[in-house]
Image (tube, rainbow over all chains, first blue to last red; front, side, top):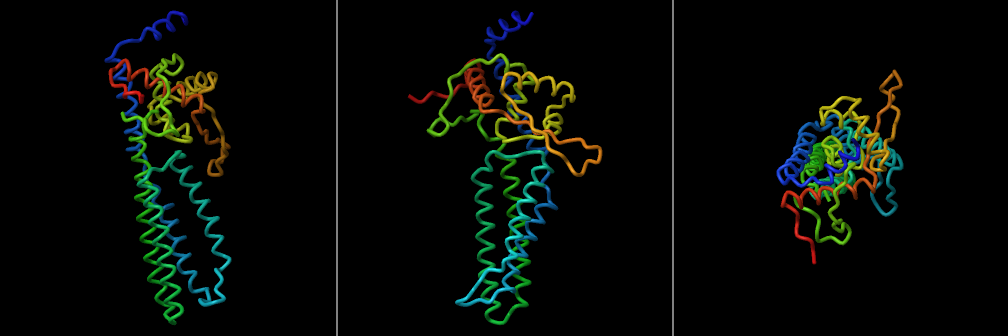
Length: 163
Length: 116
């Protein structure tokens, strides 16, 4: 029986059936991409980490002897924990995120750097209270951009070639 | 479907019909796993709309062929000690799946032009 089945499969030459198999593969990926819900709470947690990092400007002494607060490394550790939770929550570990997602992540990092620089400037001018605004901006930007990155990574599952 | 034809990092494999990959459920399993590093067993089952037993049986066959590997991790949220099972295509599985899809595309008449 196994031999018969094997022979049947080796003689598989039906173009319509082959095309149907290929369509099913694309349909499955569409189903998968459509079924993934962005983990909004965890993306907001990444936004909160960005806000904390920008707020760390309050804990600095801008100038020649500038030193980054050591506790900001804790934020990096928390970021890895959140990324792990996102994987577990969605049940997907991506091989590649795709150009759009990587672009959104890079933009989020640049926005954070910019806002951190602005915050340092504000602190040096004695406007520490205004860091609250840059922190809120960091939260909003990172939450939005990580959402864009997540959606882009999921959407590119549809486009990834089979080979 | 577009294929990576221009990048030297991902050379196009030779079309090869693979009888282990070809049965519909196994082909669909490989198709879902192909773009991912790993996928939760439960997400795979729900996307394919098959039972645990059916998926386990097909994964066992693919595993015996060396095409998939399973990894179990604990889940602190689950008090009954159930584990999350991650499923992944092995490099051999990816290669066989890619070659099989090219064979299907050839049969369907949608195969990409091989670079000369």
